[in-house]
Length: 211
Image (cartoon, rainbow, N blue to C red; front, side, top):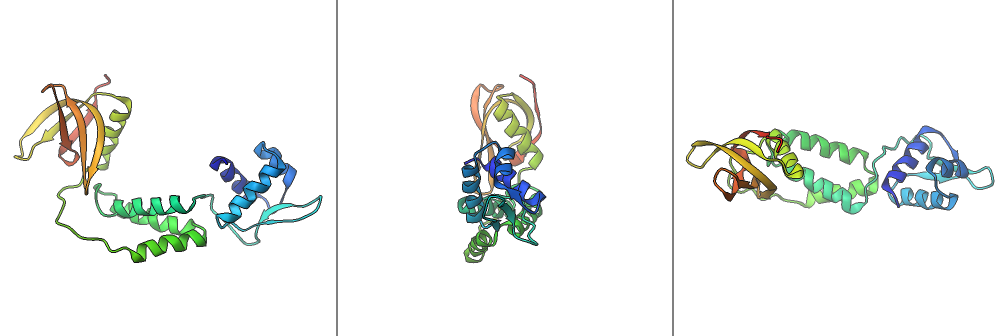
């Protein structure tokens, strides 16, 4: 079952009070039987889709309902909630408040059944506060490094070591790793001819070289 098709179906149901089954099938490019299955899937996710029987019958959202086009099963909802809660902990500089806002919006648009599950996760979880993790990585730095890893593109940046000394580096990035609240770049250091691990919060002005 296509999530994209479910989103399209939900969007159509929001746009008009009622749709005949064959017309929905034509809009979606599927059979009427597939539309029935998709409607049952929406109902299972908590969206109040009603059906009118008979030859002239069809489907529509319950009166007065404005449902957002967000389709998540239980596992997806919990995964997103956990990820946003972790992000709110400050592992990436400057996105803590944004993560809290996103989590609040997620809870507002989830069907009530999933919202209760996510709320239960929040109320039952007690975070353990450890020692300060030090500076957080800048979102811009992580974005540049992630793109370079994806594109297998060399990167130049300034790196500050544990002693506070700055050095220019030219590396072939391999991947980003998280450990606790810290981010690390694993890369081949072209200038030193060896693999190195760099703390992302110590990297400044990363820029791809185009090679």
